[in-house]
Length: 192
Image (cartoon, rainbow, N blue to C red):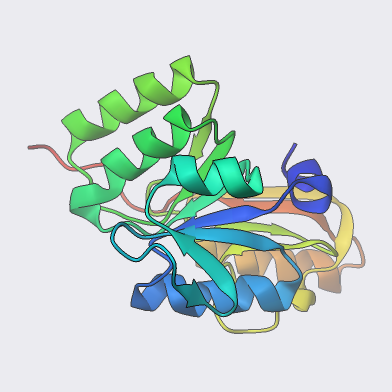
């Protein structure tokens, strides 16, 4: 599913693209070959980041670009609402970078996402790497994402750093990875 959305999909949407982390990691995603179709930051519609148009809402961005995948860099206090907005706009997969999201907010998010047939990875996910295709988020940080060789091994980890190290070992052993997913390395949420 992830490979297909990256290879043939209409592109990725970045929530919080105008913030420091969103701006930096959007550059890395573009450099990896992922088509970033739109950014969303309320109140910043009409601007651009690295040539990517910014919209005020996810619904506007989806209507114009048809994006089906989102990487969310919304701050913790807005992260739950950002995922709900994405799910209600028809996004199929949301990767959530934020951490320390209140548990009662996160439970609402998961219910809305389930009803909207939206998959959610995170919170506190470093992202996804599909070797030979690109990356969503920042697995591996600013190191070249090309260090991940295509192959048959899938890696899923709560630790983004450990997943990246495993990807390098797998490459060293001559196999390569089909996909690497960081599902989030700290407790899923915090109690109110």
